[in-house]
Image (cartoon, rainbow, N blue to C red; front, top):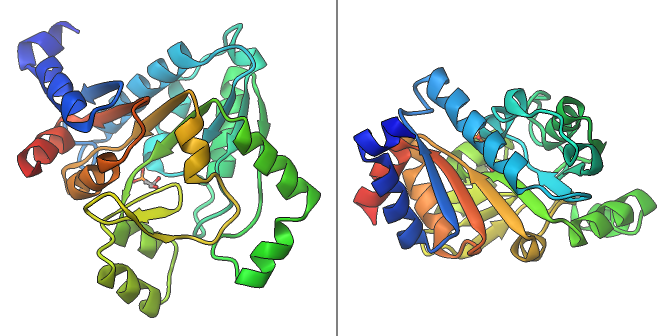
Length: 256
Ligand code: G3H
């Protein structure tokens, strides 16, 4: 905290908070894209916010990604954590196991002695498989949990990076460029006006679930994500707490 006052970070936090019209902004020093230590700090701050935000019996939905993964090491068991349930906000993406929403929901729960529920289904389903799957009891159960989700913890990515991670076809990549997708969060692609221009056809948490949850933690840093962050926050719910780094915060304020 003392460092924050000296470095002007708290001023930066307030400026960003006001611009985005959200509940709170937490900025860690450095650039998480370049410096693993900064990423660790971002995870630590996010874990701290999460542990102070959770309430007894909460349902907490988590997405995947390296920013969310960084939270895991700093979660500790508490009276409250033992009563909460972590759920995967979506199915699988790409081939990387370690950073999947499923893996993170399970590892967060293990760290804090909480319950968890996973959803092992691929993303990018064809229309008829998607419609059929929605009727399956395990999917129905998950969708009911999304309806009752109290906290959402999610990352924000650049549209191009996330499309690559999802190994989309060239055609889909071109489509995303044409519709001006710059940012992505929980399977939704946004243009710079903050409007959804594409949604991955997958079983997962929907925007309306996120909007009605009590708390939302958005975790994303790095100078290169500035445009994606700006896009996401045009219409981000007011109850969002944004945990980011100095590099992203400065670049965002320069672009606003
Ligand atoms: O939806 C966006 C991703 O969760 C961002 O992933 O934290 O690895 O950049 P990342």
